[in-house]
Amino acid sequence: MSDRIRNVATIAVLATMAVALAVLVLTNPSDADRVESIGERIKCPVCQGESIANSPSEMARDMMSLVEERVEEGASDEAIVDDLLASYSGAVLLDPPASGSTLVLWLAPLGALAVGMGVILWWKSHPSGEAIDRGPRPRSGGRRLVPLLVLAGAFAIVVVVAGFFLQEREGPASGIAGLAGENLDEVSNETMEAVIAANADNPQVDGMRLALAERYYEEGDFQSAFPHYFAVADSPDSTEPQAVTALVRLGWMTWQGNGEAGTALDLFDQALAIDPDSDTALYLKALVLWCGPGDFEQAAALLEEVLADPELTGESRDVVQSDLDAIESGATCS
Image (cartoon, rainbow, N blue to C red; front, side):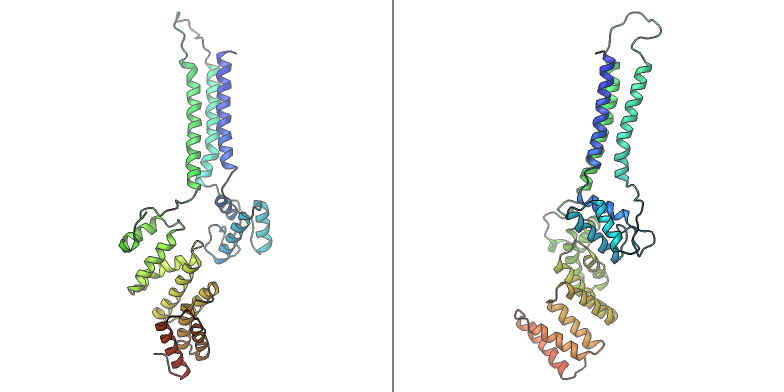
């Protein structure tokens, strides 16, 4: 086999490897990638041209939760899309925009192929002998290395791009950057705010958000506490106890800050839908019913439900019983 044929064959092998690597990456998406990709294909039924992956609406979040469940069950993308279109009136297919990282991966192997073809054409148009005889000169293998080095470089670029892509799509690190191993009691509010902002997409940040919101709440700084409680209550990654605490705090701040009984009661009901036995939610809902619309009967029933909890501590039991006695005597809320 001649040197030229050997070089051309090597170039073809390298180009094929580059394409195969990119195809391997693109055809083996993670579950999170699949959920995002499917969500970008479906138009939100109650939004103006937004996909359910990008919409903040409650319906869109419900649809994305369904996508996550179906992906975990092992359903195919097309089956999931069909389920969504059949279950939600107004949901239609969208043409998903190409994301930056995915677009680079598609273009990188094509670029490698283009470089390879260019090198092959250049090699064919520059034979090893020169048109003008410049006399005898030592034989050099340098020129034969040029196309190999160029293709190897292109292949390396594809490998690096794929590596970054795979690292990125693994999701956030398990820890929260900036506070690894730190005791939150020793961390200032300002530092926690900065770390939360830098780790907004990390599921573990909900715990820190709630801790910071509780600080603000205890200080009476409802304005600073509110957005953090809201973020925890709205987060799909928060635990049930975290969500209940956030909803209860939001309800009580809404009542104390603005006197909005209806909104406060709705937030308490959301908390109770998650944990029907939450003594705090039951007690505060009773107080708002008593002090707001003056629904003495329902308020008393809720306080009796709290008192029925055998785990209610002595001091708390005394407070609840005192309020119940006042309600039953017809006293107005003080």
